[in-house]
Image (cartoon, rainbow, N blue to C red):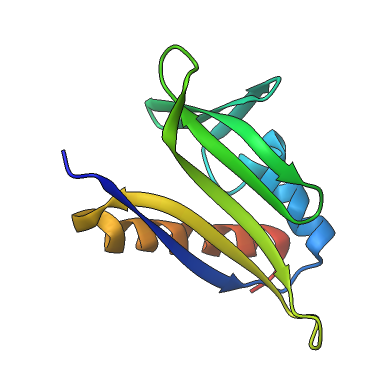
Length: 130
């Protein structure tokens, strides 16, 4: 198996950082745009899409700014891969953007970026940022 590579993409979002943070850090917020359903038990989040389910641990968060979910294996042990959602506010213009940091196999990076573009498009519709 090819090792995964880290990539980063940034999306401008017309929203307050506080509102945006609710959609990237809570199960109810994430289930509105990221997955079909999201459940949490403590620091562990279960993301459900159609018939598949992935578990991740909320390994770090900074209120109003960023969250990082580390994917875990069947024994709830951390894997080396994670995804991070980071809210950036331009100090001068106050423009808000969301940076996504994720990992994908080298030959799947473009598809992974397209998937994130679709997910973020859904997020923008949910918060009225279109």
